[in-house]
Image 1: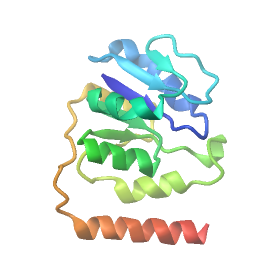
Image 2: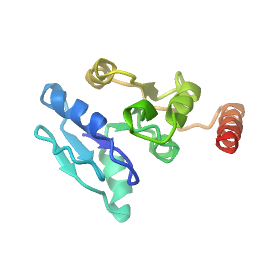
Image 3: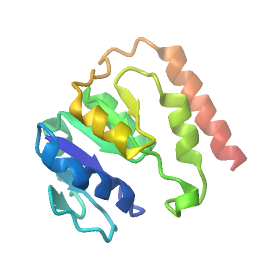
Image 4: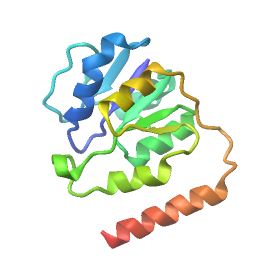
Length: 158
């Protein structure tokens, strides 16, 4: 199963609609957690919110995660060893108050198991591929420390 999650704080109809438009072409069924969005998917199963007690089980059952660039979801994908496709929210499209998600993906791109989709075509192509999972080993302590420092500095500056 492909899990699409937009988080719980803000709607992200652009992401949900994009996956819905090509869900029928995908080799696996899709479950979308649409949060506060107003778009109603027609081609995939969906739920407004996944109960916190069920979230780990849904994550465990998924073969790939598609998400906004929320660091909590990235860390959860890493914990479960799931590949994750990040679609950053964009302030210019009214999806967030600033472009911190673009800054986040700029630091995550190229890391094992993390894929960044800036267009619907990128997203579709990733979902049609067999994606590598992140390593369960934490072999890059320096890389994690660098990312944490970057995020702290970015948050402080905003």
